[in-house]
Length: 231
Image 1 (cartoon, rainbow, N blue to C red):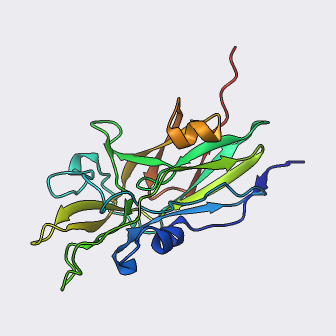
Image 2: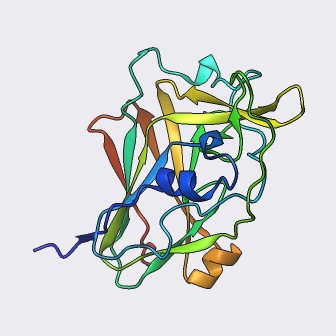
Image 3: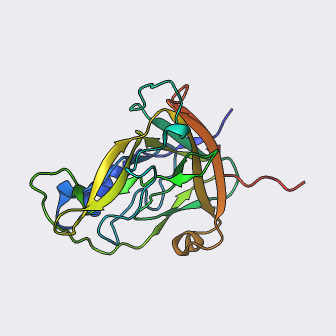
């Protein structure tokens, strides 16, 4: 009989909306829901704030779109997203770095060519197309925290397929554009740490990764966080 547990659901997007923007709640964006589904809740399940006014960069072509060469020809609907089951099948806890700007994981577009890491959170800014634009916002500083995944436990992370690029309005305030990831192959990457202190300080991450597609057949993938046994 399996002893695998699932943690209590927590939505990181909700935590981001409540905590990441200290002045303008409506200015927050974000689409990665951290939903632990087993017996042990993480120390912190979602970003607790933002250390800057939005973010920088983004992935894609000149307009932030993922290049046509990286897309599939299906044109399928990707808004249902995908659920990532982050599984600790070992006998000791592992820890994830709960980064205020990046969350728990990374998603790369164009993994077979020139990988581009997508920006999954847009905190402390409004849509560049907002009219009128609410102006520059300020956010409280936020320190990364450690999220514990206990033995024989998994966390489910839902990505609805949206990502963000960043720009500036006429007053040079940071703004963001919300884009929907097209049907294509992507790479999920997760930094895993041996201790909570290592996660908080970003010391010696052990990266695990797995390919997936949008839309994803079955709607989910499982990624093992357990270290491989040495022969």
